[in-house]
Length: 91
Image (cartoon, rainbow, N blue to C red; front, side, top):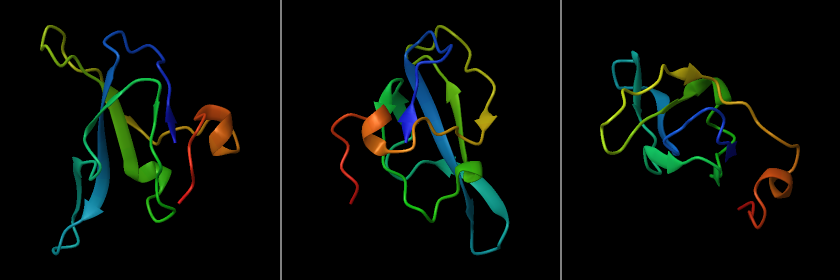
């Protein structure tokens, strides 16, 4: 999955995924592969994680700006990993 720069002026994104705890109550938690990622980066997502179960927002690691609003559902760019993420290898 490619995370484009978009309008994020800080160059950093915060990423969360929706999980159901033992109580079966859905909850947003930090992405298991790391909850922060540079814009323009790529990350492989397993087919089990639906795109509407992912949310992202722009944030400033220095804390000078407030985080943006969450965007739920991540758009996929390109039909093949190599189109958006050169050098990406599908496991």
